[in-house]
Length: 80
Image 1 (cartoon, rainbow, N blue to C red):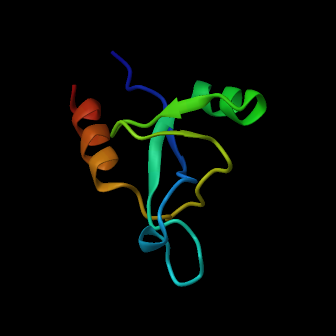
Image 2 (cartoon, rainbow, N blue to C red; image 1 turned 120 degrees about the horizontal axis):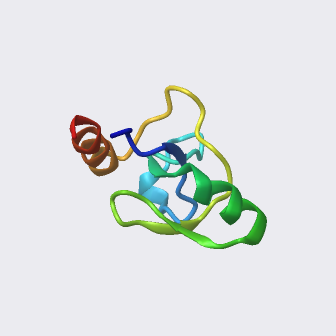
């Protein structure tokens, strides 16, 4: 069985405590790839692996910090 296809994207509705000094999000979340484009174009909400719900605004850059709960769930999915 193949692994689910996911990528990380910005969670735009973070509070000021969850942003770095530069104003960038502290964490990015795993979301199904096919939902990213749909959300970016249509404005639909997406649901991250951790359960966070938000509209897509942009993708994370390689090496961006990932939500610990999303990362844990993603690793569990990959082991199956």
